[in-house]
Image (cartoon, rainbow, N blue to C red):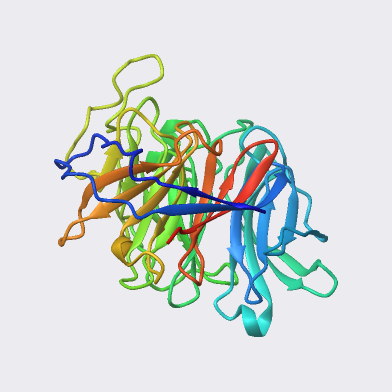
Length: 370
């Protein structure tokens, strides 16, 4: 499809954050290629080794899309619960995908007590466009009837283990219970086992890495430093970027930089002893969908910066970092041009991939116009 050049530096705004923001950073001239339309609420995209794209659609469809936009549905998905914010969610390639064809994906499923988040492993048979050897390697330990806050992006660390988030399922107090998987960042092995690096405080579920998260729908590992980052939804205000470390408590719902939808104060306010502060926050909310750390050749001026999609504000936030690694600038790109932006990924050539979470959603590629 025709690429549309967009000079994006004009559309910039600064967020409220715990640190004073510096002057906005100059944005290079950007162009957008609309690779494919007609996707039903696409949630995630991965680039396959041959250059095709693997896209999840929340109503329960996994699709391979060529660079020219041709679509082929992949068969073999398990039974999923589709409703509210639930359905087929994230997908990630195994680090050894070239050899084993293995993928991981998250989804909401039905079970005793209602619905919950699960993680699956499968083999992608490209010639047959089918999943084989599909197996559930994790399911949260307490299902409930709510239809929101399932999480759940996947980030794979250097040992091949999986980090992923699960939201509080709309029941905030669960995020402070380390015996409950809800409201947590979790860390499991490729077979669902428990990595040795996991924290072991008394009373914690062994898969839990950190607690006190409201709804972490974005998660990424910096490929250069190995640092784990999440982006998560606040209530009315208080969307956060966090750096979860083993055994930490990130505070929800005891502290927040937002307020309840009613306008009432949340918990103890913005800070409390033993509870972690966000690296960055937005007030008012932008409703973040995903986060990536930019490491690529196409935009060297973005090296190490954050890219965050926004659902409510329908934009891509480019957050520049200073020499200490702290957020220093925020440029808001493509506001209201492509609908609710859900996923963001850095492609092997350094371009940036986006999906728009709409009934007629799109797969988009951002590249340098010059």
